[in-house]
Image (cartoon, rainbow, N blue to C red):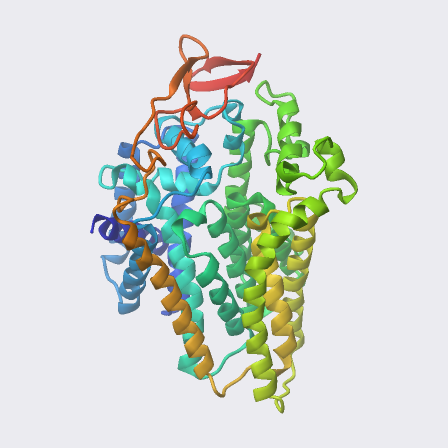
Length: 551
C-alpha cells in the first residue's frame, strides 16, 4: 500500500506545482493533463537549477516540496473539483500498477541512470563528471526529477515514482481523447490518431522495466503530433509547442527534430516582430534548454554529448578523443556492429557505403518488423472496415488541417530518414516511425472524417487496450516470490546480493567507486560510481566545486 500512497502524494505534488503556474480555462481531462505535465516539468527544472549550487539531499527536497504545497494552499485554499480528484486517483492507480513488482530498466538503470541519481543526491554539479563515466554525458532530465523525489517521507523509494507518473499522465491524455468520441458520438482525425497511438502503447509501452529514458520522450512526440492535429494554426500555442519540444529533447536528443514544429508554426503565424522573437528567445522553455545545454557543457564539455561540433575543446575537462570514439562506437553499435559478418572490418569501414545494412537487417530490422507488422495489420483491418462501411462518404478537408497534417508528416519523414541513416536502433526513433505509419493510414481515410456512425468498434478497441494494459500489470503479481513490491534499485541479483564496490583514489580528497564484480553495475550505491576504470584524470577543487580534468 505504500506504493499507492507515495504515488498519490507524488502526483498530488505535480498537480500542486502545475496549479500554481497554470491558469485553468477548461475543466476537462486534457486541461488536467496539462496541469500535471507543467507541474512535472517545473519540478524537473527546479531540480536541475538547484543542483548547480547544492546537492539534492532529502532535506533540500523536502523543503522544496513543502514550499510547493504552501504556495498551492495560499493560491487555491485546497479547493478541488471532481475532475481534479478523478485525474489524481486515476493517474495514481496507473502509477501504482506500473511500479508494483516491476524491475528497473536493464542494464541502463544500473549503468548510469541510478548512479547519476545517487551522485546528484549527494553532490552539486561536478565539472567533467563524464570523465569518470562517459554515459553521464547524456543523462535525461528524468534523472533530476527522480533525484528530487528522494525526501524524508518517500526516502530512496521515491526515485522510482516519477517515471511511472509521467507515463501514466500521457496514458490518461490519450485515453480521455478517445473517450470524447463516446460523448460527442463522432470521431475526427485527431481522435483517430489517439486511437492508433493507444493501440501501440497498450502493446509496447506498458512495462515499467522497459520505459528507461525513452518512454517519456516518445510519448512527448505523440503528444506534440496530436496537439498539432487537434488545433487550428492560429489557435496553436507556440510556447506550448516549444515546451513540449524542449522536454522531448532533454529526455532524448535523438528526437531533436521535433524543433521543426515550433519553427514552422512560428513562420505560419507570422510572428516576425522583434518583441515576439525576443519573447521566444527569453521564454521559460528556451531558458530551460539553455540551462540544460550549460549543464551538459559542465559535465562533459559538449552541449550535446557525444556530438563533436557542440564541444568546447579548450575546456580542461573536454576529452575530444573520447567524444569522437564514443560517437563512432555509438553509431556502429546501433547499426549492429557486435554482430558484424566480416570480423576483420574496422568501425569506419563498417559505417561507410551501407556496409552495415546486411548485418543490421538480420538483427535490428527483424526486431522492428516483429513489432510493426502486427501493429500495421490492426490498422489495416480498421482502414479496410471504414473504407467498406463508409464507402459513400466523402468530406472536404480544409487547408489549415492539411497544413498541420503535412507538417507532422514531414517531421516524421525527416525523423525516420535520420533514424535509419544515423542511429537505426528502434528505441532511438520509434515515435517517428509509429507516427508516420499512423498518419499514412489516416491519410487513406482522411476524406471520410469526421465519422458519426457505428462507433461501437472504437469502444471495443478502447476497452481491449485498457484490458491489455491492466492484464500486463496484474500478471506481474504472479512473480511476487521473485521480486519485492518496489523496483530493486540496489542490485539485479535475484538473491538480493549487493557486492561491495572497489574504492579508487584520484587524490587525497577525491575518490570514486568501481563496480568490477558480478554484473559490473553500480545501481543506486555510494557515489560517484562507474563500471569503467577512469584513466588519465586528475581532481581539482575550486571554491566549493569539484573538477575532474584531463592530465
